[in-house]
Image (cartoon, rainbow, N blue to C red):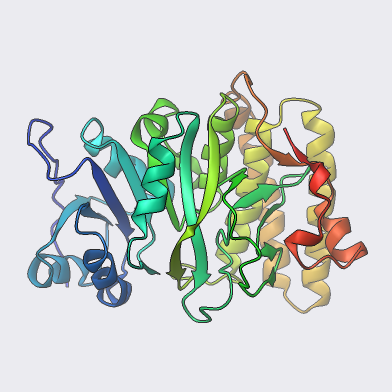
Length: 354
């Protein structure tokens, strides 16, 4: 059912009921809204809940306008992707909220999820953003791929988490229940100071989707901001709600955006870093081919072409580095394939530093 796009702009002079906003970006996610939005409303009575619709062509807006009374909507004229969609929506909200909680439409919230996050962020001026523990909605005793218990990068910008090393996902046994500084927070569910988000102009819209939250955290980290995981707060994420983890499109975006992120954020020895990373990507492409997945091999090739075509565009986005973000000074591929490391706690903790 088609809905005529109308931009809803909240009047800055209007007094809101809250200084904090939960912002959910939706694209053809009617099923997820019906399943997960009730938990958001039930467990967030002190928040303004805003659904930004990213040009949906399903009945999402009809459902929101007729079945849900406790939310506000922002209707975007087209699908800007995750990065661009959030930028468009949050630019309309700039100046009205102290904190944004950016939430995927397939996340289930729990009782008092917000208290530990807000307390920590309000009491730590150097911290720009925090995330809860992200567990799987399908297997609630296991971490979820997208963020788990806080994310890191290795030397060559391979992302991993407390609770997830590549595709090895751990069971939650309380082993990561300590509040911990991380390199990046999960794009599925994270709380960020609105001032921090806007001072670096938000996400890089060119990324469209995937890795944009890591790039945001690196840019903020390079000017001294910090990020933490607060496991006292927990949420449950379905995962793969927009793109399945093994879909060719997702593989392309992950590999392409990783390379763009390196160009933007690697301050020393950029070309050697890129050469090694692309060689490692080549090994991954061969591995996909051997496994009978030629479509995924092709996506890596396309990702590398995108790097060549847009190298100068992203090179010009490089910013002076005031502070080094927290990094794992190790080689995750060797840890995983050479040393059979499958748990975050097995990594050398002395290699985590700025």
